[in-house]
Each structure stands twice: as C-alpha cells, then as structure tokens.
Length: 158
Image 1: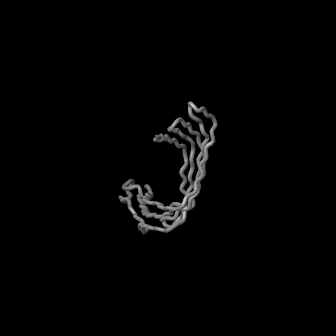
Image 2: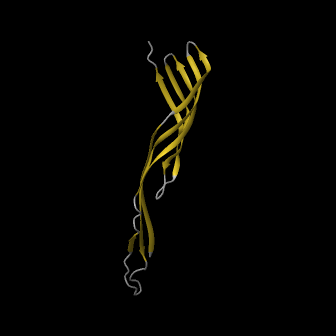
C-alpha cells in the first residue's frame, strides 16, 4: 500500500516603480602621490520613495495517489490505485499601486591615476514591501540587494 501527495505551484511576481532619489557620496584620500595617483576611501548613502505597480500571478494544484490494499495476495482482491485531483485553487491575479521606500549605502576603496579610476567595495539596497509574495492572498515582502562591487572608470580628457 502507498499514499502520496504532490503539489505544484507557479508564480510570476514583479514590481516596477519610479520616484525621487536622494544620494550622498564622499571620498577621502588615504594615501596620495602626485606622480602615482591616490588611494581613496569611498562611502555613500541613498534614499528613495518609489511609486509603482506590484503584480502577482499564482496557480497551484494538489494531487493525491493511493493504493489502499496489497493486491491478490492470500486471496485478497486486486485493488487498483486511485488518483484524486483536488479542485484547483482559482488562479490568483493581483495588481496594486504601492509606495516603496528604499534605503541603501556603500563603502569601498578606489585607486585613481590620471583619468582612470578602479573602485571596489560593498553595497546594499533595501526595498521595503516591494514584492507581493502571497499565494492565495496578498502578503508583502522586502527585496534586498547586497554584495561586493567593482567599477573601472576611464575619463576622456582633453
């Protein structure tokens, strides 16, 4: 005998927004040489209010399979296994206008020589309540992006 359950789910979620942003960036020389360039400590903060649309489309289905008996052993009748598909939950399509606050920051080091600059460090951005992560009903989740970064800049001077 056996009894098994299978559940499948598909979901598409998105947030698209636009809004004002305020940022502050600073650099402080750690070591410099007029002939060989400079090593700088870089840091910054940013904040924004994004106005946009949060969307979610979900679908899930549950299937149950079972074989209640052992079959034709010792005179028992053959029992075929049964499959029961529970009624599919109606697909959920939600779209809502939302306001999403964002804060972030970065810290790193850079090396500047003439018209070129190499920067690396760590940055983080936090978007509060940006995603609808619910299945049958709306449930908001934050979306965060963080990790190391590297930037190579080359200026075109004249």
